[in-house]
Length: 140
Ligand SMILES: Nc1c(NC[C@H](O)[C@H](O)[C@H](O)CO)[nH]c(=O)[nH]c1=O
Ligand SMILES: CC(=O)[C@@H](O)COP(=O)(O)O
Image 1 (cartoon, rainbow, N blue to C red):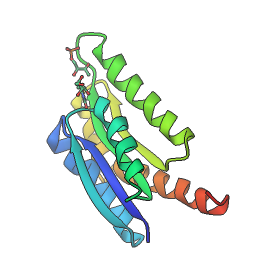
Image 2: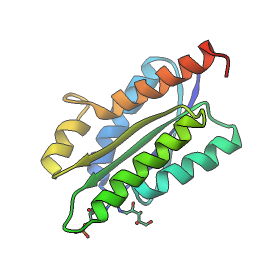
Image 3: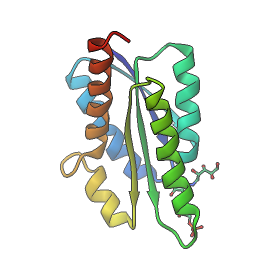
């Protein structure tokens, strides 16, 4: 049993609820313990994961959020920098599944968030578990 922290950026609550439901279902089906931590936006997710990882209370993390393109360059910053920082933490050996959607519109987000359709929350949870299994295999 692993202790998994879902870190969610609650920017679009209805979409997050679907992503979290998918992630939670995948983790609990495998017998893992799940907690949820909420931050304001996707840019806050990597910092929150870094702090939580330092506490050594969790074995792995699932990043959940939705970034929908607006009118300005802000989309590129939020989508790109959150992914870049999550990847940096992953390369430091932290098991993270990235379930932050980066989409053009809400229709695209709905299909990907829905556990009965693309289930990107569940997919991210399984990615975190896959990295944890690799840590065990390679002795980290
Ligand atoms: N536009 C979106 C944001 N923007 C907010 C940033 O993530 C951040 O909270 C702010 O810049 C303060 O540091 N966040 C999302 O998760 N989704 C968006 O579409
Ligand atoms: C992430 C975004 O692009 C968006 O939420 C911000 O919108 P805008 O570029 O229209 O300010």
